[in-house]
Amino acid sequence: LPVGDGSKRYERAYELLLRNVPSYRDEESEGQDDVGMVDAMAAMQQQPLEQQHQPQQQRLQTQPQQQKHEQHPHPQQPAQLPDPTANSTHASNADPSTIFVISMQGTPGVDTRNEGRFDEFQSKWHASCNKSNINTTAPIIHTNIVHCPGVYEPRRGYGLTLSWLLCLERAKDYDLDVTVVFEDDARLFDRSVDSFCDWKVRREEYWKQLPKDAFLAFLGGHNWEYPSNAVENDVETMYKELKSSFGTYAFAVPRESLTSLLDTIKEDIVGGFRDENGKHLHHNFLSPERSWYRAAERRGKKIYGVNPLVIWHEGGFSNTWKKDRGSITGEEKDMLVNKIRGVDSGTKHK
Picture (spheres, helix red, strand yellow):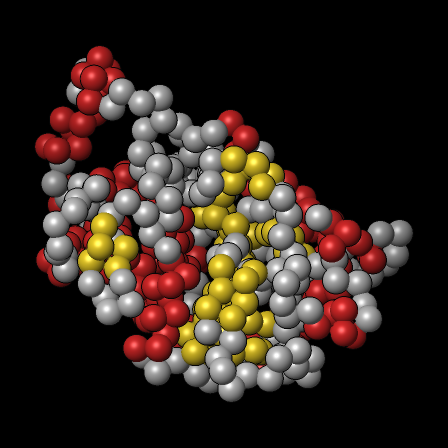
């Protein structure tokens, strides 16, 4: 984000986006004109503040509080604007160890169980990565952890999708070979510490092995399905081609696919939930994984799952499902490579 008046730019661009996101609309609409409005969000951040259209923002700021409550009777308001300056690291200070973490810590109007979750992610990440360095002279492993403020939207899938849009637009300025995005309840498997914490080792062990046709790679997830020609329980292949999966709490996007993924996210926001043929069905919820797999296929690319998995999902309150959920290792049903190898799968965390 820009320094100085970046917060105001962010708010204005965000307002422009939200005023053009369809909400509970049943009629069929491809929404191609709306895609331009979503694209305008990023452009607004680059304009001088004085050139941006101010009267609408001023009207919003001067609107009586009582009138706001009359228009939005529910205690939790949809699409709350997070503080973009919280825990921010500007692209000018970017380094190759950077990872991005979506968290609603600090987002107004969300469930109080989100308090402290980004801080907890940082604490547990650094503890895992430097566990072996305690009481030794080994150097501390540095990771630049960037907080992407989460967006609250009551419709399932929309909050995360809006959060990815803002986060990945920001990530483009970092110009990383591979952009890594986590949710704040993602946790490292103990087996992954040595290979994933240090960015130089991560580059050699993971990114240099990433297939050239990768749209993206999931570092964690569950309910894996493979193409019909896949070899089941293949313990030697580092990246397994996937047909479908669930869970977006840990993924990696190569630079070549970042714009394509952003385009897919924008299509979801303005087009809503669609069937396998791309026909609009509704705007009640989104299924991002389905959209991503279809987008990869349309572009002649593939989605992979890293083998063995790097990340598991810690149990707790789910903003998507509005309730507490248990931990997920991603190895409960499939991709049981570690049981085959006879090493700890991490299920002790369940």
